[in-house]
Length: 474
Ligand SMILES: Cc1cc2nc3c(=O)[nH]c(=O)nc-3n(C[C@H](O)[C@H](O)[C@H](O)COP(=O)(O)OP(=O)(O)OC[C@H]3O[C@@H](n4cnc5c(N)ncnc54)[C@H](O)[C@@H]3O)c2cc1C
Image 1 (cartoon, protein in one colour):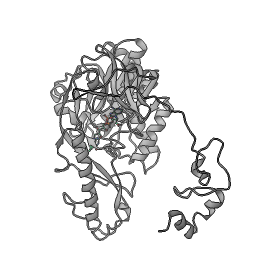
Image 2 (cartoon, helix red, strand yellow):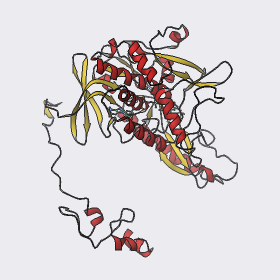
Image 3 (spheres, protein in one colour):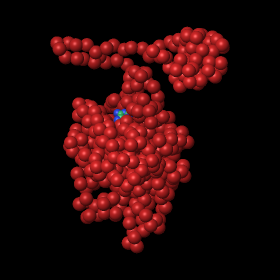
Image 4 (spheres, helix red, strand yellow):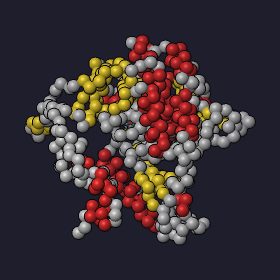
């Protein structure tokens, strides 16, 4: 058998690497230079060896669980305090991204805790790319952008990155087109990282929020798990943007749990190389399902049809695991079939979503739970924290502050897809509305931290003036 290195050498690639000690692909290549002092790597492979050093263990093991009479017990033990801050945001999806930046811009020290290694949640890692519900239609037919503030800023900056990142530039008013740009997921991740860094938010990736620290109904921080073990972050205010209201749940807050369709998206590559006009017949529908990604060579697909998209409990790991396998099998077989159509041979799957898509799971019992009747009867009150478009009706809805304040639990706000109920959940959970509720929660948390008050008691006039300063449409 020929090794990768011999193969590269036979191709004439790697020879230069041998002389310089460089790496060809992931193949270490011998170098004349030695290893740096203290390295315990293989001197024959300095390209790897220059990075290999012994390290004192960075964490200590605490007492482990025990079984007593067949039941498993977790012993009490002291947790290291990893960080202290004014506001900790759990979950870096669209809501958490907006919450963290808004809180920082409102003057708070902010930490953002995200279980994965990139921002955007379902928007980027779930490859749900269309920013819906950003605008309302005026009587004359023009479209007005109502999701301004951080959402509007993100849309403009995504467009400024180039036509391969976002489909068009949203205008505040007088736009002839419905503003719902499709954004490239990698461009969105890059932009979100940039904006979080610019704002000066402490970003902790690979950190899974698993509990809250609380005294009665008042929360005082969170517990998170990472490769560094189980540690605490002390905070004056918590914003739960986990999508599933994980922190509210841990704090003993009230919620309703629902099933919803779980989806899974795919990016197809080489769509600009398709020849001919014949469109392949998929098992469920004609291909392609969508073609509106900003990047011309990539087309975007989503499954919403049974058996793969059925009512499911998005918190049940057995269901989630089964769905992951079913979806990938579905896409694989579907695209294999597609490639049999003349002209479509070069199409392939560039990526399947790394984050499966439960649309909704826990819906928080907030002080005000908005439904359509309240909207129709104008009963949303006057504590507006932002607006978002209602996609179907092309109207716009105001969001009242009390829709992000959970009953019972103090110093905790909830934002994103865990809001809304019944006949409004499918609007509240869309990407632009999540930006809006996230930004408001971030501002309210920052002001509450500064004033030493619970968000429940925060004066709306203070909240309004900071939201106004942050260019939220009120
Ligand atoms: C298949 C599908 C298609 C959709 N299509 C559209 C569409 O076309 N247009 C549209 O506007 N909307 C669409 N939506 C809805 C929209 O994408 C989401 O509802 C919205 O992006 C949710 O944002 P979020 O920030 O509230 O939650 P999420 O995007 O779920 O973000 C939550 C974040 O928190 C992290 N997290 C979760 N738990 C923890 C924890 N315990 N500790 C630390 N981190 C945690 C997650 O990793 C994630 O980054 C779709 C949704 C799905 C599922």
